[in-house]
Image (cartoon, rainbow over all chains, first blue to last red; front, top):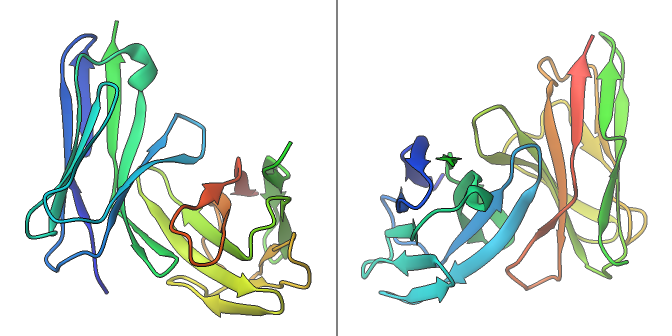
Length: 109
Length: 112
């Protein structure tokens, strides 16, 4: 089945540094969603991208969907300790969510 | 408050025992889902239901069973046939046709 590959698996940053996680697929995706899961918590929906080349921003978070709709990225500017958690890219296939492996972000104060 | 509840938060299973995880939602969502998460990994779909009295297998349905007798409830039974049941189980719901799924707080299942 269709898979979504996500890198890196872990990222440790100093507070104030930027962070980026990347998501790739070998096939064209109809959509990409991003979820955040805090340690010990459950995934929380952040955003959905559906258009080629789409860019959306939420405060310090910038989400991009590639022109070929095969890759996506999440960039966080000036990380804060509240950004700690695992970020998942997800492809929604008619209600069936296909999760990437996730990128675990730790932020050192 | 509207939302999804799962109980219990922690569950211990003995070898050869069936256990049932509860998932309830008062969001009036038609669709409900069960996922399994193993340490350091993403979620994998076990079962999903788009409407009452109907459900479909996900990617890892073996060793699990579900029922959908009421719109609000979608319990998951982990049977003795599931040889590696230790995991974090997450229930989710969505409005049929909508793209966003809302997750419950999860149940951690441990085998004794």
